[in-house]
Length: 360
DNA sequence: TCTGGGGTCCTAGGACCC
DNA sequence: TCTGGGGTCCTAGGACCC
Ligand SMILES: [Mg+2]
Image 1 (cartoon, rainbow, N blue to C red):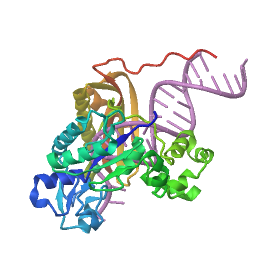
Image 2: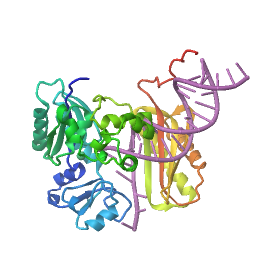
Image 3: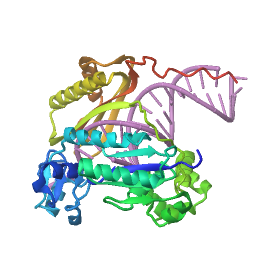
Image 4: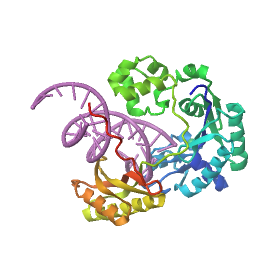
């Protein structure tokens, strides 16, 4: 795949920005979107507006902590319906470019603009101008030779930034960044890289031989780390995506202690999973139950059925049976139900067993 | 005052197969 | 019959992403 040009478009503080757009009195004030909008409840911050961030409020922070750090902020519930509508208008602007598009959640997308006549930077600027004038919102855009670099670039100058990293600059631009900047390197991997190799930056990581990384992380992750440290990413911008699983989970405001209450909750979640499955045109053969105890230890039990299911009663029966396999001797804070091994109603052939390998 | 909800992919061991 | 090598499927857990 030689000489691609990829854009990564990322809306700035998206949920909070949409709220400030539709409620002008919130503009210029710290806004925290998360959970049900009540900072005394269990929940985390989905998005903090830029006015809230200097107080140390950011995505993933418990709402109660956010309230302590910034009690003057306006706390709002997540309103996916509203964000989805704006998201669709943003995607329409991106599709207008004629580029192949891969969306990543509601507010991010990759575009492969390799075959368009305009340079990537000009396309990026035009997208930002349309988002500003038509949506009254700002987006940051990164331009690079692949998705990995484009995504890193979009994060370098936020908000409303435009960052271009041409192929020849990739090594120098990535080298000083912390390894957690890389897609797929989170806190655990970063801590291990630091402990084992003394690695902190992408440049440090690029200095570790492939063999050493594979010894430590296995053949796949080792090779992956070796590649991304060099800004190498061949993955295509992929428009279509078949879902692998459908799930529903819920954290209770007060931990559950009665087994009968847990069974009722599991049946309810299973019913919603079945509804979602049918609505999306799928059925499933594997059901997984997730139980998180008050201690935060999480266990799961799953079972693969002899035939597909997509109805509420069957899903509930299987999920409740899985709950009865878990030793529930402590309070439970979360229950979840997931359906996987999906078969599409439209293209009924599920991924069957591949052709038998020839005998040795 | 702890730690959401929707997902994806990987690992690892045992069962089973060629 | 044994050993080895390559698969797949299943389950449980974990890391990571937005
Ligand atoms: Mg964003």
